[in-house]
Amino acid sequence: MLETDYLVVGSGAVGMAFADILIAETNANIIIVDRFAKPGGHWNFAYPFVTLHQPSAFYGVSSRELSKGMKDEVGWNKGLNDLASGAEVMNYFDDVMRHQFLPTGRVQYFPMCDYKGDGKFVSKISGDEYQVKVNIKTVDATYLKTTVPSTHTPNFLIGDNVNFIALNDLPRVENPPVGFVVIGGGKTGIDACLWLLENKVDPQKITWVVSRDAWLIDRKNTQPTMEFFEDAIGAQANQFEALVNANSVDDLFERLEACGSLLRIDKNVKPQMFHGATISQMELSELRKIKNVVRKGRVQSIKKDRIVFNDGSIPTSEKHIHIDCSASAITNLEMKPIFEGDLITPQTVRSYQPVFSAAFIAHIEATYETEAEKNKLCQVVPLPNHDTDWIRMMAIFMVNQFNWSQKKELRSWLRNNRLDGFSQLVSQVVKEGDEKKVAILKKMKANMMPAAIKIRQLMKEITD
Image 1: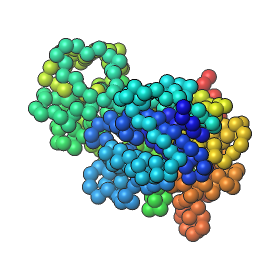
Image 2: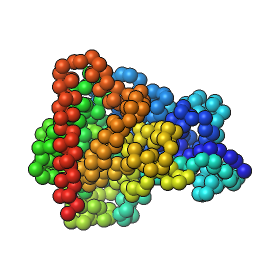
Image 3: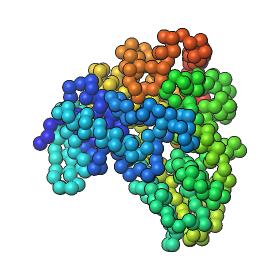
Image 4: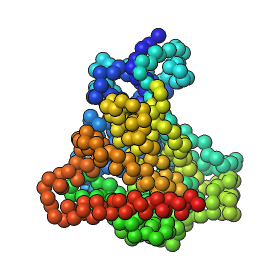
């Protein structure tokens, strides 16, 4: 029988970020259980050329910097803050576990174990069974169920003699095919297309199957350094202004695009999807070189001579390589209370930022007493899927930000937590009094409450 204060199920980014705050802000003992051999969750199986799509400064655990503090000088992210590679992320989490967590003497780590529930887990290597007495709470850091291409099972039929590969296998191609068919319009599909273009594949040899076009975020607007204050905080101010002035949902998205808050690859196609993916302007220009974009709904089957969709078919051949990029990054969109008795279920409390959210939730657990107050401060921001989910997401995000702003202790914690990204920038501008930057903050403040009123009206439009 093992005994611990907190049992954390999952040593992915969410579980690691949560445990890191517990270690720093409490005296609790922690057992971390994970089914993989190394901490890092889905990064264990990520494709070889994957990188973060937001700056590294937003990722990892609060206590240790992931970013090198540099800007990229080459490539299509040139001029923006560095994006850690998958290998860098894996090494980072391994270092955090081995050199920070375990040396405290308060953390026990059980990799390669399947969690069975009720404090029970079994080693996949030895078969040993363990029972844990949990004195305080269990933390389910696996709830969001991140998936990756290498472990994804396509939801369409694949015929005999079809050259079909997971994205992980793309760098293993040895003989040039007559063409590449990229199946998936999300961030993974974007990564596949960019990798092919970066490796000098003729855009005419790329067929991109896109069931839904997506709204994207200009990565320049996510930079957490003072150099990009006008872009990052300016984009937030512009979003509030767009909300205030919008007279319909369609008008809102036109305004968000006009002010540069949202981007789309094809100006002639109205996006129906929003997952919060970021893209640089150079990447956008490259993707627009791909002209053979197929929009016929979801793939039903791939046969040796054609691809069948909801709305028709297109020809293909055994000499084409078909690349599966159809996996959704997060498959569990159902929300539940974060604090429920002796269970904590980390979810997003800030838009697009599950890692920051996990750290914040751990701080709330360590600092506040009642479950009601904890859940009030940690209202779940829905993970976006449909385009209008931007509105639902923003509505709860604004409520959380307001509730946090009412507590001096939380304002201080946010300023001093490196995963927050922007609170320290805002505080520094207020202190220094730069007129141009202060004007952006005044614009944001002036539009904040009117935007909160307008967003409730827009919510009625999308739910009626």
